[in-house]
Image (tube, rainbow over the protein chains, first blue to last red):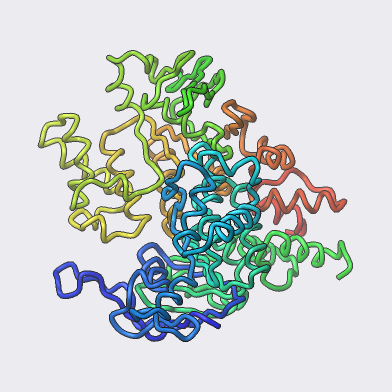
Length: 287
Length: 278
């Protein structure tokens, strides 16, 4: 069970003066139950790649398969395969449209042909997942919510379609720290419960390090690095910098502490890891 | 010295779709001096952007006053002088670019306010040089990276020679390199060109570069002070739904584990506190 990206290339406006090669021979596989972060500079091809993963775009060369089915097909199997991949676009709250939160979230599952009872159950469980109280919020207008809440409603709309794979394009952009942490804690809950395959597109190295097991690093339409987050943030720092990327703040701070003589071990990917590493280096706590 | 921006008992109330009054800003009192670098932090909906939009008269107070360079923003005759004093840069560079060639985009504002032709070119060139984009003058903006586009947006504001620029989360959509470039550009405008900076952000590592931090909560100013005064109160900042820079958070956690440390804000300070031998 996986999304397989098999040697895909894609060119915008091919054979015109505006021709722009957006993807060049990209290959990787993301299994169900895997949490992957896709990083890369602006214009590196991340979003174009994402649009290939649920068949919004089809590659010029190569193919994308979901659970073994090529998304390019016109048959029922291809349509079903495309439906297994949920997509949360950038600023998904801009796509809210219905009069009530219930109706907005119900739109997707209803379009999937679910019965009213099934739709109701899907909306309730999606709202519970993103921590919006059904009795309080279901009949409210989505447009009176705070930015963080609106984004949770938009994500609930995608979750309600019960996708096996979830692609999220910068779900925390423009959110304050608490709203950001809320969204990710809900996301991790869904991820663990449903064992989805998640691809998180982000410009935040801290998010990538904290949540993803594996990193995909894009630049100039090509996939440059693919490996465990800790390995890449430890061994590929020069490459990351060359590709306009960076390492998490905690890794930088650990480096500076080492340069000042603290014998700190490992690559602390999060604040919590850094605190533990410092305590250990200072002998403040037994290992 | 006269403040460049002054809010006196400024409140802003609006009526929402269901005829309910919402108070976005409540009795704000604030003076910003020429040359200051102010960071405004606060959760979504705390009133940061609403406040910033008063500083160049995109919004006017429903109660109280907002003065820019001594001019009342709610007096219509003051609108243009106010907008020429305070420029704005927003989150999404794509929404701020209007022309198909970089230098034309930067010139757009100047043409709009009727600057004579011969004066336009030198001002565009100077603005592009300040943001480090001279080499891209003839390029198409849509081909540039996010950080480069944002620098073009800054150049467009800069060419109007404002005394103050408001940045509303200018790095929220940028990659690490783009973010670094914008932060450097902002610092340069403040330190070298003495432009007053008002910088709204959710990124605390950027906020600590300011001279003064204003933390907003539910439409009022909750905390105000130097980065050190504000960010060493880790628990209070957390209660506001915000976070502190990494070094301050780490120091706070170590302290809670029973280890005495001085107030810490930056990486350097944490290094000094933990590695006293050097």
